[in-house]
Amino acid sequence: MKFFSGQVRRALVMAALFGLIANILMLAVPLYALQVMDRVLASRSLDTLLVLTLGVLVCLGMSAILLRVKSRICSRSALMVEQRLTPELVGREIRAIASRNEPDLEFAKHLKYVSSFVNKHGLSAASDLILVPIFLFLVVLVDLRMGAALGALLTLLALCVPLQRWVMRKGEENIELQGRIDDARHLRLRRLANVMEVLGLTSRVVHNIQQSRDCEMQDRLSQDDRVLRVESFSRFISLMVNVTLIGLGAYLASADQISPGQIIACLIIGMRTVSPLDGYIRAQHAIFMYQRSRKIITDVIQNSAYEPPGLPIISQPDAGVRMQDVVFSHGPGLKPIIAGITMQIRPGSCIGLVGANGVGKTTFAKLMLGLYRPTAGQVRLGELDISQLSRALLGPHLGYLDQAAELFPATIADNISRFEPAPIDEVIAAAKRVGAHEMIEQLPQGYETRVQGNGQNLSGGQRQMVCLARAIYGKPSLVVLDEPSSMLDWREAAKVGLLLEQLKSEGVTTLVISHDQRLLRYTSTQLELTGGQVRRLDSGTVAPVQQPSLDADAEPASEEIDNV
Image (tube, rainbow, N blue to C red; front, side, top):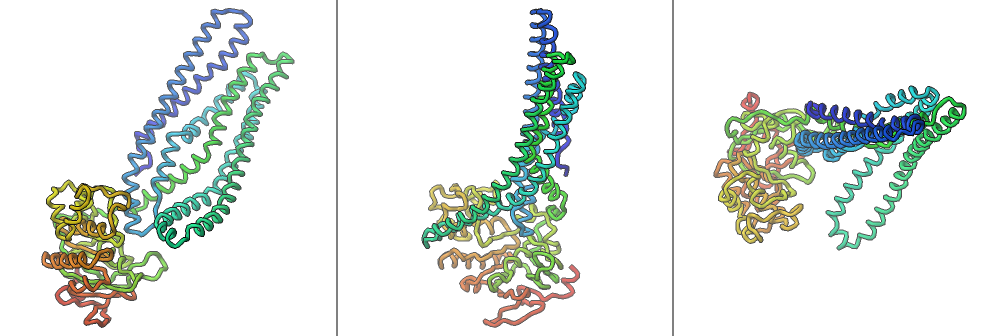
């Protein structure tokens, strides 16, 4: 996938061409001044003045129109870039967070930098640099000495470009890192606001933040000072162009070596020559951020690790799950969380999984669902490697309730139906199965109630019940419930137990991660995850098993697994 499409490239070339023509048309002003000073004042011909004035007004009008067209092309090109890259980048970001447990890649911010570069000053400033040698050549044609002086000053001004980039590169990474820290801090403060107020910690937290911010502001001020020094020097050189051309022109005119019209023409063209280079220096921040963001986006687009799995599913997959020598760690050199598990779970089994906090129960569940790819080994759903299956095709056959019980900012019905245009009867049926129908009916707008923000208009238990309904909506073959009763009272937990009985009777393979004995008693077999291995719990004792035999619910590893 190319960064810019062919259509965008052609549009940007046309925009640069229009900008070039518009700036060349602006040369009518120094030519007008030259003709007025050398011809009109000498001949005192009003007709000549009128013709020259009309001509320059036509050129300026055409230039204004072309610049307007250029701006419209750039703005629409920026929109086309966003429309083309946003779906791909959002999809890859979701997969990166879900399957690789990576932090936010901030594609929206990087795409904003790219769009700003195309739409605003960055691309325009870069494309206008071609005008510098053209205008310098014109000054040389008018007078060689004026052109030499202008060229020397432009050389000094051009040295500001690498200096500005060096200064920005030195401080931009620290500013970027600090921005991420600020975002993370803001998110924590929102989550802990109630705790801070109740425990009286607000003043202490504010004091700590202020101390940290004071150090950050000193670093930022130092960076701003360095940038301002370079910008001040470039402004000084720009102003020196006017002074030098006027002074040198006056010296040459006093010796009758140049006419007043030539002085004015060189002055106006010189100012037009400096303008693109000065604009390019001021646009260095936008250009720097564009280049950095483009590299990040391009690397992600070209990285096959972010490619979505695409193995098709012809029919409903078998609900049996097989793990063969599965090993998983979050990175090279890190201790494996899952250390060589081999097991087979038969279709229709209801397995309870327990273990200490942080032992890897959620990781085990994500391996079963194909979100994580094993470091070694395979996880198969029926005869298919689940990590290679198309998520769009596999999703309707899976059900998942995560610990956070997060909902989308949409209606309750849309959340349950997974945004499918399903009949409301199917949505209600799913809600009734988990015992959430009466609760939803009591909401202000029933199933049309919109979830606000992170679900602040619903209690934790209400969110969890809606998420349960979403997990079992349709006809999933495999359902994974991670702490499904953590926010529920005993009555609602009993309804979840009845749901587990229904899923078993329907032949749905279910994995329940919980420490709640109210639910675990509805499971057929209970496993404990410890030390990267699973052990079967039997009558309150823990017995190590290298290849767990789960009676009617799980078969021991054998040649049958090896041949899958």
